[in-house]
Image 1 (cartoon, rainbow, N blue to C red):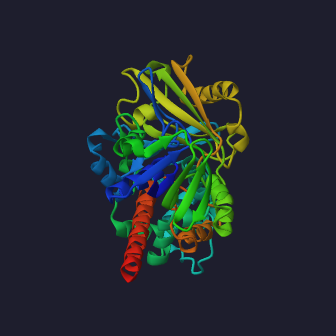
Image 2 (cartoon, helix red, strand yellow):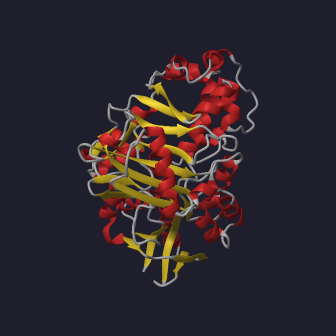
Image 3 (tube, helix red, strand yellow):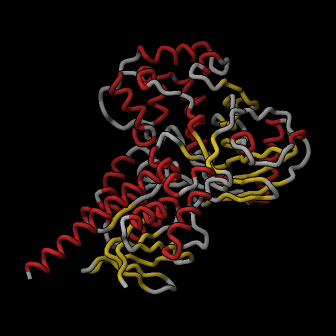
Length: 460
């Protein structure tokens, strides 16, 4: 049997692409190496507490994510960010500094010096950068808003949100809207004002009652037997009729088209015999290790109000926690009444070594650090640790050129496509958008192949 499309990878990207292609009437198969679908989108109930092992939210600003939840019939499961999120916290010099969630929050807070606040306020007066050379997040932010803002706000943000180092990440690849605003309006501030949007990103976040895993579970439920778990792919090779996907124990799958929806290092290995340029580009995308340490306490054990998404750490603060999310504050039903829960993140590009500490040693280290910061007394009622050998792909300087090479794969190897969080954004919502784009391209290719065959039969 020859499938229309073989999709390698059963994470959100692969499942979304398969779902769209199935809706187009395509005969699809999804091959997932793990026994569990969803990639790192894993949500686990532990004694009434909900732990997110990987991503925790979706963003309403990406319409494809909203559309997909509606199509799957899980919109009623959606939960929006709680009104209890009132501040943002940044960790510096051994303590947490609270900043009001407000467009002018940093201007009204003593977290930045008067000079730092003046630099932010005068952003509109700075001329735009005229050359289009790639620039790091830190360099861009320091140029537009001042060095203090870059060090104390954007660097912690890059570490916490992207597991990266703002001195290495490309602003054009990571935050393309910022560079577009500068070029179009001459100022980021002016661009935000012109957009007339609520500038508080937190209010645009949502999840589901039982966590983000509800999304891949709904996709897999729709695809049913088309999803094969526990299938490790050995190689992909070109044939006159399409491609052959060889697995280690389940034989060979034939397909007219193949979509690689796997991590970049896995894609690189599969691409090596097919397209050297794409294999090299994919292999040069790093993904540092990350550990997620989850705790639950009785509310009375914690002095901190936890009135935030969590906190981010400024570089070189003397601890190992990059950031922490307050799960029980963010969304309802994350903890039983009278209890709180949160997860600390250790590792990323800034602190690879810490992420690799054995879990039995790491958990007490993180607990001690959190206890000092949040005023926690006693032991947790629940503690868990999830360690990822590879976390988020790093969009470092030159990433846009890598993406151009990768996106050109289907031109060099017709019928072979890529999708994943290393192409169009690392968030779940961006992965959905990228996967739906890939599915549309695959369907277009299959239509062209079908038309060409029809013409040849008619001519014969």
